[in-house]
Length: 150
Image (tube, rainbow, N blue to C red):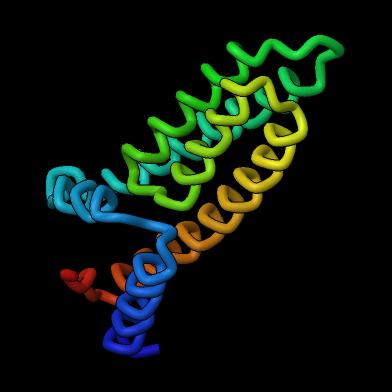
């Protein structure tokens, strides 16, 4: 496939991620920190986010499925997930975390469990879309092209 076509696919995909509010301006700021001296910066930061998020989601599952739920502990995990989501511009994940924290503060187990499913869903969608974006970036570079600027 021609470099131009790959670049157009990349523009379409990144535009959709912003339009559908998977990402916000924080992701753009992250991209602006990437340069020739650190060409994999965004991938590295997002990969750390994925690792951290999976650990936090597992911790949340475990915390919410105890016989006696520690809502303060759950809230601490959600707070961490919200912060790391915000730091990479994962807007939809961050937004679910806001509702999730409210449920934790209210001691609402049903609400927490519903939010857990929703945050897992948003996280999984985001992860697959960003992995597709990064794969496309690798194809563009391998074909001798450069990433378009947004």
